Amino acid sequence: MLRGNQRFVAGEPRHPRQDVERRNELAAEQKPLAALFGCSDSRLAAEIIFDLGLGDLFVVRNAGQVIADSIIGSLEYGVAVLGVKLILVLGHDECGAVKAAIQSQAPGAERLPPHIEHLIEPIIPAVRRIVGPQPDGRVLVDPSTTDALAVGREHLRDTVAELLQRSPLIADAVAAGELAVVGANYRLADGTVDSDVVLGIDPPQLSPYRSEQERTSSPLQSVSTAPDAE
Image (cartoon, rainbow, N blue to C red; front, side, top):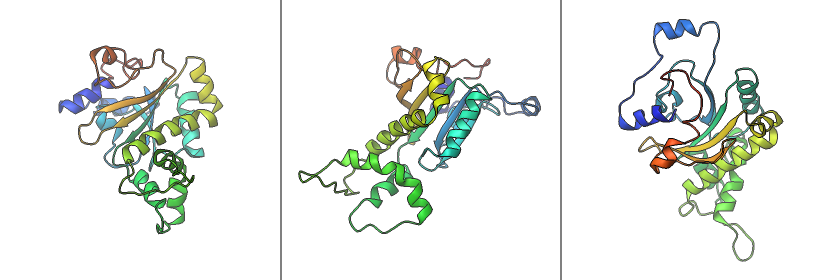
């Protein structure tokens, strides 16, 4: 996956496994190399940013990568039935759901439609922690000065933690060394993927773009794949 992302960043994608032969091969069954839970933002097309093909990723998405029962069930299916060895939780900068959560906490903010309010509710704790309390204990959110990138990263960590708390199946697989869960952020401008939370792989690694030592042992690189499935 990392090599595919590096090709995408360099503008040298191979577009692997997207032909008629691959389509026919997958008609009877799928065996994805990883599950990806990401934001539904149109700029976050998983198979494109990792330069992968048909059947390579089991993808679950919603706005803001917010945990819900349907998300957990889908990811558990990926682990228990499809046998994926990696769950990648992928956030990104300039996230509309994160911005909406920040704006919703501003004094005098207009109410959002009910379903959108429900969607962004899990992001609000990250907003309030990043802003922090005033001396009197109140949390006053000013969207113009709130660090949306920091909120997004905090929410990403919350998402990974909530996934493990609410899914014994996934938590047990991580504890047994059978599954890795990685929380990462995608940078819209340069296309890179920066790992932030790594569970189930020892030792934890960070972004493959930070150093040669980290690049050679990154968790995304260590996932077993078919030939040229990177």
